[in-house]
Length: 279
Image (tube, rainbow, N blue to C red):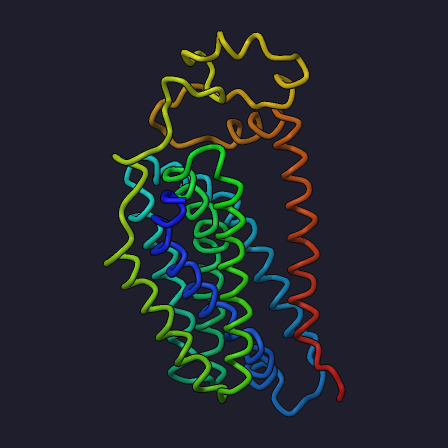
């Protein structure tokens, strides 16, 4: 239980990040309609813009997230986590200043750039931070607790937006996001570069590790499910390395497929929210 208690500061950052990110979702529909199609009840351009944003963000995150995760092994989780937490504030700050057409398109461009760095980076870095500080037997519970805190931030942000005006929503979201970045730098201990729960000398996921001989006695079915990564060489992973990792593990490839279809439905739902619902 002590290892879970040590993650309290990370949970605060995760809550504040998701609180500020999802608080603006109820208001962004009206802002988009007023900026792109003022005075109209329906606007297909808004849906196209949202779809383009999701496509570019997803492709960019596919490339950037593994690089950020790899760099966090060298420079630490905290240093790399600061990047997406800080960048996510910029789009909120733009609409907190003004919501005219010019400011909206500036927000749109910045949101795409921020999404590339934040879409998957903050989640994978948070999971890596938890894995660095929690033993193998308690990681599932720690991951579930992190997901619960993130969901609480989503729920709290959505409910809070109900009691705020549109302008106040973006101002509060930007302030909360800035508070999360400051809290991260001030209170969250570093992890990854010098601090790690992980032992490369005996890692069943690495080829040629000291415990690979002991793992050879496992059942053949278990070996087919477990990926075997090449030894870490201190360089950024290439696309071929990522493809080899996915195709080399049945468990990992299945999890990737589930994540893909889940994200497809989730982003489709977010796009559908841009369609005004008659009351």
